[in-house]
Each structure stands twice: as structure tokens, then as C-alpha cells.
Image (cartoon, rainbow over all chains, first blue to last red; front, side):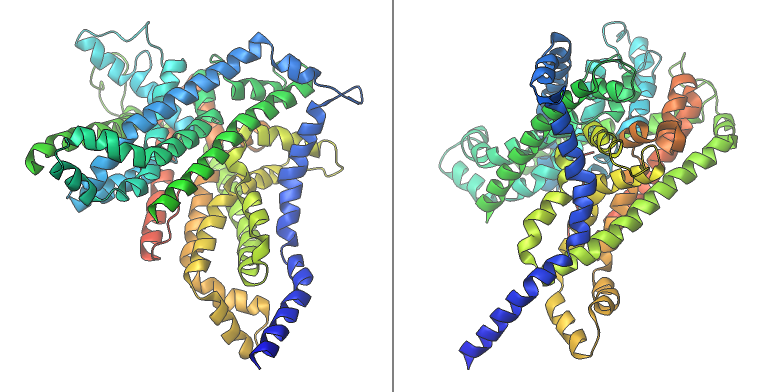
Length: 291
Length: 270
């Protein structure tokens, strides 16, 4: 009896199978039409010159001019991701250990909202406070510190501060679940065994948190590497980032082979998706470790 | 020991709060100041910049364009994602990896690359959507797909969709009726938070709009960037409008998700 039921169920499932896939067809067509075919066109175009396979455009993309743009993008992403991890983790720890529930909820909500900020309004807010006649610039001048001309908000160091505005809350949201995974008893056990709080962090907590910290770093890196709107609003084409370069090629501000933009795009895509895949892999690891 | 530990927490949280709040407050005050670029405090207050910037016909037009793009994207994703996610959970769990790949595509692809890819492909195929708002909506759907997919899927996983489906089937309902009248009402909180996430993403979208349609379909962020180049005070009023929209949407999301149980929706990437 049981056997026959399973068999009927099994064949039923198999017969449904290929018609069932049809139900997913609209979604697959959407993915093909607006994601994979367009991307394949770029890949193909970046590898084709005069109708034959060529790596010329990738060679041209390795020009010092573009290498500098890649370098700047990588440096900016690495800096803001490091600062994000370095400052975000203590803030997240402070948020989850505070006994004031209102503060805890309000600051988590603040992180939730602000990590979504970016682009033009954020860039403009930073011009208001740190521009050459910005509010904080004037305030600092009053007490004898002049930011300008050594610091400019319209530069890479200015961008670093502006990017931190969305990187910091993103790190906080990413690391909070991992911090909840640290058991209070581990700290107490370490203290009972005579370790200092410092040694507990160095030798127990940080190694446990490492995959989560690393995955946070990678996602923050990707987040900053692909960003364009904030940089464009803040600096126009002044700051030499790879996304700014590609956008200038798309808009036709610079006359160069279109295939060059394709090659630059593919390299950027490779860097960014490598970070995102690394992030997914490490965050799965750290979720599994917690279970 | 507890007491001694509290001072560092106050300092850390205080600094964080200052860093996150000062740019917003400063922009708000700047937008109602007569002048605030020579002295430490504003030289008096006025609503002049607000009145000026809102009286341009372009103000309402760009606002309207942003709402149109956001709602079109929201509607498109709703129609695309909800039936797909339900069907996948019910009949084709093997399809999940492909669906997840399509859904999280925008996490790994920079906005400028997505724009370039769409331009390259659609200038080759005979489908006249280049430079048309339709291509922007399609691009925004790709961009915000994970924000709709994730909450809808979480909501589906939180209910007993199989039992609900079988119960409705035994009463003679067909699949579309089941989806519309049984499943959708039960995953409403997921759908609403998905819609709000999509709305806030598309409303603030700049990269794709700028590269795909530019001035042909000027949205609010494009209008704001234009003003930052020549009139900072009017730009500050526009920035405040953007901040308010973002805050209101996000607080609604938090409210909806906190009522809808323990589904979490993390916004990642831009």
C-alpha cells in the first residue's frame, strides 16, 4: 500500500516536471533579456576586433591611464572597507550590549535607513558640512584649524569620508548577527581562567569573528567599488575612478574604441563579483559555524 | 565593572550618532538659511529657497517621473516575482539556484556595467527601447530584484503554503485564484516590505537613469545633481526632500517587517 502511494506520487511528480518548469519561463526570459544576453554581448564585443578573437582591448585596458583609475578605485574601496570594519564592529558591539532598549532599536533603525543613503543627496550633504565654505570647515577655522587647502571634499580623501556614511551602517548590520553568536559564558570562562578582556578578544572572540569580519570587508569593498553616483556628484570627473571612466566612455565624452569600455567593464565586473562571491562563501561559513 | 565599562559605550555611540546625524541636520538648516557660508551660525532664516525651487515646473515633473519609474518597477517586479517564487516553492524547487542567480545578479555587477551592457545589446537587436523610459524600468527591475525576491521568499517560507494550496484545491480553486486570494493575503507583509524597498531604491536611483535615459526622462536625483552645480541653496532643499522620502520609506519598512514576524530584509549594495 505504502509502496504504491509513493510510486504514484513519484511518477506524478515526474510527469509534472517539465510543464512545471514552464511556469518559471517568464522569469528566465527576463533574466536572459536584461541580464545575461546583454552581459554576453559585452564579453563578446570586448574579445572581438575586426571579426576575430583578440585580447587587444584588454591590453589597451592595461594602459597606465586606466591602471591608475583601477588603482584609485581599489584604494578607495579598501580604505573605506577597512575603516567600515574597524569602526563599524565596535559600534555594533556597543549597540548590542547596551541595556537601553530604546537606544538599541533606534540605532539599529538608523543603520537600516542610512546604509540605503548614497548618491546625490548624500554627496551634497557633505559639501554643506565639509565644502570649502562648509559648516564644519568654518567651525574648525574659528578654533584655528584650517582644513583647506590640504583637505578637499572634492577629492579621494573627501570621498572616503562620504562613503563611510553608508559603509559604517552596512558593516553594523552585517556584523550584529555574528556578535550575537559570541556567548557571554566564553568571556566569563576566559576571565575565570585568568585571561584579561584584551586577551579574550585577541585570542577567542576575534578568531571566531574572523570569517564574519572578512565577509563584511568583501561586501563593503564591492559596495564601494561599484559606486558611481556619490563620486560623480561630489567630484564630477575630477577623481579618477574606474566607474567614472566607464561612464565617461558610455556618454561619449571621451572618444575611444567602444570595445575598450567593454574590456574595462569586464575587469571591473570580475573584481566586484569576486568580492561578492567571496562574501557569500564566507558568510555561509560563519552562519554554519554559529549553528 | 559594568559601571566602568559604560563610558566607552556612550562615547562610541555618541560619535556614531553625531557622524550620522550632522550631515542631515546641517543640510536641513542650510536650506532655510539666508546665508551660511561666511559665519559659524546662519545669518538669519528664510523659506525663499524652498519657494523658489518648488515653483519651477521641473520640480513637479521630475518628482512625478521618479514616482512613475518607481511604481512601474514595483508593479513589474510584483507581477514577475510573486508567481515565480510561489511556483518555484510549490512545484520546481530544483529551479532555485537559477532563480537566485538571476535575483542576485545586481549585487555583483556595477551599475555602470549594467547600463553599458543594456545599451550594447539593445542597440543591436530590433527592439526600440534604447533611450526610452522602458529600458530604465527594466534596468531598475534588475537592480531591485533582490529587494523584492528576498522578502517575498522569506514570507512564503514562513507560512504553510503547501497546506493552504491543498486546502484551496480541494475546494476547487485553480492556481491563479489560489495565488491571488489565498497566498498573496498571507504573504502581504513580505510583499509590502519588498515594494517599499524597491520604491526607495528606484526613487534614489541615479547611475542607470543618467546613463540610460539622461535628460530625456529627468528624474528627481538628476534634477538635484543639476542644482548642486549652480545653486547650492536650492539643491539643499531638494536634498532634504530626498532624505525625507528615504526616511519615511525606511521607517515604513521597519514598521511593516516588525509587525510581520521575524523576516529580515537587509538592504545590500547600491
